[in-house]
Image 1 (cartoon, rainbow, N blue to C red):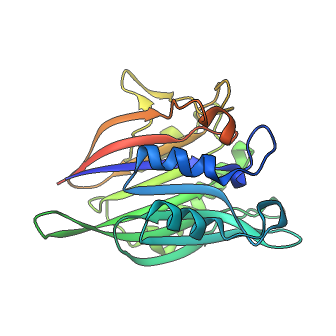
Image 2 (image 1 turned 180 degrees about the vertical axis):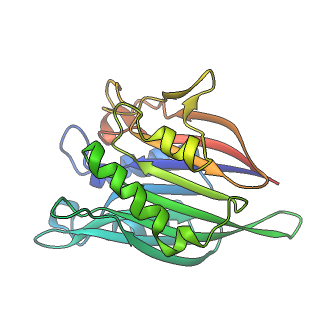
Length: 249
């Protein structure tokens, strides 16, 4: 069966015009109608986003029956972190702390999603939704924290698995860690050059491929990868979403 996966740093639904407009994020997500949407910088109870639980608001508005939330950063009032919206049941979830020393707190939301095949069979898909730090040294250490975490360590190379989110990786130096060492395929790179990432940041004139989706496991195959080209996406957030079509046998 085919799956559509989307990863998007929504910047708290505050656009490059500095306006809080969740309806723009909803319009973008509704256009793509991904089976699984992996979101970063999602506010819960913060004044700048009207004290809303943005994960719940987006899930309810878009008809996603299942969502998970991993809160990483505490602000003066409220929190923000990563959210995973799914059309399939989320059977397990936990938040993996990727914080390094005194740097800004970072995390990875881990979920197991029971993908239901139309014929009635079900396969488990392990999904890691992360937001990495701003320095290369920090990101390398965070990759180490991820692979040593119990949710990742218990997986085999055959388990269908996604690692996606905002890697903050301007020069593409993280891609070889996931591709060459950990055995993932980068679904958001140009097919002719696997290290040439699809550009997503800044949204109004992208020069960096910060947002990536990696996949691995038996029966999981990349069909296509692209970025959102809707006009509203150039202002809705400072990132563009990336969308990947996968086949899960």
